[in-house]
Image 1 (cartoon, rainbow, N blue to C red):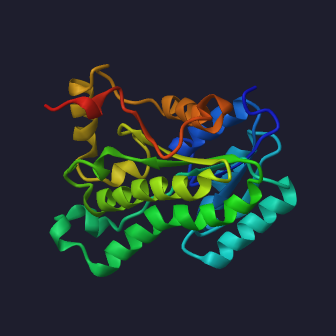
Image 2: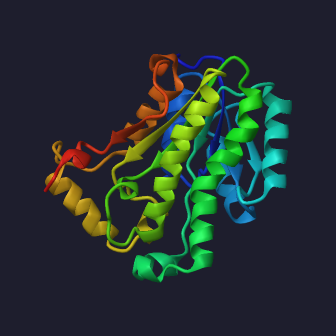
Amino acid sequence: MLLDGKKGLIVGVANKRSIAWSIAEALHREGARLAFNYQGERLAENVRSLAGELPGSLVLPCDVTRDDEIDSLFARVKEEFGRLDILVHCVAFARKEDLDREFLATSRDGFKTALDISAYSLTALAQRAAPLMEGGGSIVALTYLGSDKVVPGYNVMGVAKAALESSIRYLAQDLGKRNIRVNGISSGPISTLAARGVPGFTKMLQIVRERAPLARNTEPAEVGDAALFLCSPLSRGITGEVIYVDNGYHIMGM
């Protein structure tokens, strides 16, 4: 029970195949009580149904592009939990047309949308989480190799993930004096609803299986356990890092 008595907020669960859900299962297994957000009524039923599997969970509305909704989310978390020990950021979005065409053709509006939702939202959430993490806490965000290497079809999302990873480092510096750690997990490709929107995703899975040192694709539970490590006292000396959970694929040159 590494997280016995701890309180966590996971932002970005969409359905049972979400990486965020695997993280939730791992944290709950080790004793954490969790809160979840949903964006719009379309996703509310899914999130409420999943949260019902984890006794004591809290489900609240929040669109991360709206400061008023973020404020309301954290006000309710404070009211229900009293404090917060863990924040997990699993939010990313880019318009389909900005993934389907060359990065060169990215629209100004599409660029702003991807950066706002996929990168700035971490800072917006951390601003509200920090006052609730008196005495320390852990913030974890999901990223991907496309932040550092060109992954055809990932396009503006790769640029957004690069901004997210830089944000992780700057937030780690700002929040370290409060004993709040900020880290990222760079997962290998996993067949989620969001990932299947990336052109050529099936080929990505095949290439990773063929070239990764462990010769297989990443399982959601592996990311969940890595997040558990980063949210637990076992990682108390780690901050500002991006940990790869991709069966070693990122170390390969060819």
